[in-house]
Structures are given as C-alpha cells and as structure tokens.
Length: 107
Image (cartoon, rainbow, N blue to C red):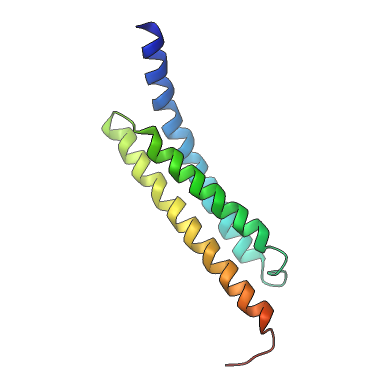
C-alpha cells in the first residue's frame, strides 16, 4: 500500500515537471529561430535536437496520465507548447535548408 501511494505521488509530481520542461523547450526553440538570422545553416542540428526533445517531452506527458483535473489541464497545457516547438523547429529546418540551397535567389 505505501509503495503504491509513493508511485501515485511521483506521477503527479512529474506532470508539473514535464509542463515546465515543455515551456523551457519551446522558449529555447524560439531563441534559436530568432537568433539564427545570420547563422541559420549552423543551427539546423540544434533545431532538430530541440524538436526531438519536444517530441519526447510530449510523449512523456501523454504517458504520465494524471488523475486529477488540475493535472490534466497541465498535461493539455504542456502538449500545446510541445507541438508548437516541433512545428516551429521543423519549419525552421525546412526554411534554412531551402535558403542554404538557394541563398541568393530573389522571388
């Protein structure tokens, strides 16, 4: 019984940690995109790593399955930044790759 209670409290504690991690990962992805104006080609691997971290964090959020409604709201609120970070970083890698292939082409 005591070990089951410890496992349940660990699950609840991880939801908040994953939520904070989602916010930090999303913040880091926007820093990479904003600061990559002149060095976007070199930052593509870093953007891919952040996208993978956001995917893993989103997976861990879903796997956590909290029991209380507040924790479920944190789960949903954490999934949104993870998805935004993945979408933003994938967009950045595609944009940087196209700009690298055709750097001087004017539309």
